[in-house]
Amino acid sequence: MTDFDELGPGETELPAPHESDPAESLDEIREAALRAGLEAYDLTEEDLAALEGDAAPVVEEALPTLAIIGRPNVGKSTLVNRIIGKRLAVVEDRPGVTRDRVNYRAEWAGRDFMLLDTGGWEKNVTGIDLSVAQAAEAAIELSDAIILVVDATVGATSTDEQVVRLLRKSGKPVVLAANKVDGPQGELEAAALWNLGLGEPYAISALHGRGTGDLLDAALAILPTEMPQVEVPEDMPRRIALVGRPNVGKSSLLNKLAGENRVVVHDVAGTTRDPVDETVEIDGRPFVLVDTAGIRRRVHQTKGADFYASLRTQTAIERAEIALVLLDASAPLTEQDTRVISQVVDAGRSMVLVFNKWDLVGEDERFLLERSIEQDLVQLRWAPRVNLSARTGWHTNRLMPAVDLALSSWDQRVSTGRLNTFLGELVAEHPHPVRSGKQPKILFGTQASTRPPRFVLFSSGFLDPTYRRFIERRLRENFGFEGTPIQISVRVREKRKKR
Image 1 (cartoon, rainbow, N blue to C red):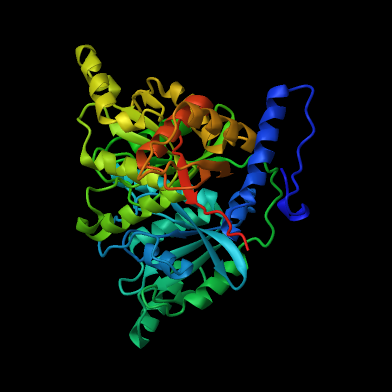
Image 2: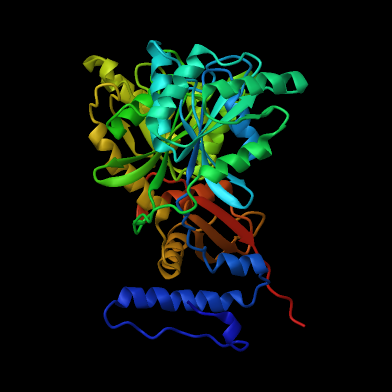
């Protein structure tokens, strides 16, 4: 790539011809000539930065894990929010709001660690409560150390004592937190928890922050200071967010892909409220799956836990690289579905449309459904579509090829030479319409970044939105980009005035 800073006024560095690939040589010659033409225009520092491309992603290190365990409604998620300093965990003044184990990155006294929030553990429960308890038990096994949270105002219950026995059996180091202590009376109530046999109970108020510093000092003292060396793969696991309106089968699909019950699944809509990160191996490759809470029709109309869960879902989309948008094939497309899709596109994430519950659609109805889908999603023909059944596993084997295709498109970069050759042929074949006696001219084009592919076009005048959409459509026809949104920005630049 030519560096203008090293050239004198009016000088142009033309690349040497490639004997092996004449087409590539012509592309590079065209690129150099067009770049030289840009010298006559006023370019900003931002323009020059766009011509250089983006940097490589950063790899994160392995961190010790601290789990927050306890029976329902003792303030576990409130303590999580206090530790991480943000309202990320969903909190509501009733038991059972947290249902899955949820990871958050935290820092205290200069040390980074992972914080694992869990649902309340109870014994002899059935249904969804049993799934929640099993998820909490799995969190104990995954953690390096544990904070057991007990409600000091209630005292040690039989359930608390059963949790203590469970923790002793695990052999993991434990710190005892006596929560909801707001005064001298609470201090006395907290002291009574010595009877649990876990050592000193740390009197805290997760709501107001009282005593949490001493608690964290004690917790970090039992966390391992060095993590075992883990071989880091050449490519970090790709992050996949499972999104969609409530009860379309997101958690069922996650469990099917993982090959085991990783998250809570129940017929009740809205079972998942926090985004849940799960590292799974699919076809011998690691992926991070994020199972998200169902997105409601209007965020501002939701209340309590559902309101915060909607915000968490948006965060999960932004943190992911690709979104599997689950749609219910047995029901018509809704406004909620289109809202979810818009969130993914606006966030610039690659996407696969997953029509779940396809097995519930009769053979005679499938043809009409296919036509209806094509009409409703006419603007999303670029998104791969997979029809499957998360419950039975039917056609789930078709999902990963679609994911690979979308991610490769999301990562794809078109060389500047090829891009400008494409734009030259496009403009020659279909020039921009004349507006007010003037015809805008595309001076130069470059792909400024990937993930998602973002193209910057320098032009002598404003390009109509219809012409931009035409360029996008032809970009897809020529270079693929299946499964990823494309961002095209136009920078109108005027010629530098002669002095």
